[in-house]
Length: 345
Ligand code: ADP
Ligand code: TRP
Image (cartoon, protein in one colour):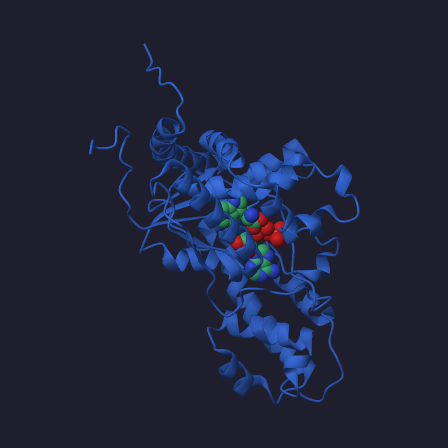
């Protein structure tokens, strides 16, 4: 047997990768379901945390706002405790290997796999024929985001689970086709007490950046008065206490989940503490907890956003590190696929 002529893949260190779309209105769901968990895990992994601007343009974006939201989202990562010295923070669009790998992977992704994606169905809605190819192919780009760093762990909220399963399937398809385990199968990391935070207006709908009602979510940049107003207006019901049949009351259950997550309490502990209270007393407690938690984050974000040059320096450093890692993976991919290699000069 001859040794394989292709480049061995780089070290299989534990690598963590995740990202958020820089589309503004970063909210408590993004924080509790994703960003806070990255901060908790950053010591154990080599981390790549990007701003998913290529994903953002799957729906129309205003260019000036997109630029501002990339810096704002980077500031949010740092304000939530991500250490830029330890983690590469960068805009996805600055590392062209994401797109290059997405194309190659798309050639190994059967349409039937994409047709199962529920998020496309939700986002395209009734206007399926007018939805873009980009929106449809979004999960392949997401698989490329992960595999281009050969990431092993991907911390996300519950809503991204299906996309992660697809990324594993695509990695498997590539590995089978080229006969080597080039890509590790990425593990979804769905952790914490609030993996799916629901809208404050409708406990059956996910809290989302794109909900047209700002009252449906608590944004990381909301001040104390706004947080208080939103929680006060949050949909409630007329049960006497929070604890009464809470599992069948989506709004009450959601608020209790948020309270528990903010205070690092298990569901049982949160219920033991607040189960006997009425809705309005509980809402006051939740307001105090949310304000205490978010005030330092929004203050830090404001401070960072006052120094865009500092943010850009962090992004430049992140891009450099990301390009190095992605370039290394792509060299092995290109060899396996059979593209001719022309070295510079
Ligand atoms: P949105 O769905 O609000 O547009 P993104 O799609 O950019 O937000 O999500 C970024 C990250 O935040 C993903 O890991 C996603 O799973 C997580 N996330 C988004 N919404 C929620 C939520 N309501 N609860 C928990 N995690 C969430
Ligand atoms: N699709 C994710 C979201 O909308 C964002 C994202 C894009 C992502 N690429 C990723 C998350 C890769 C984890 C890994 O929330």
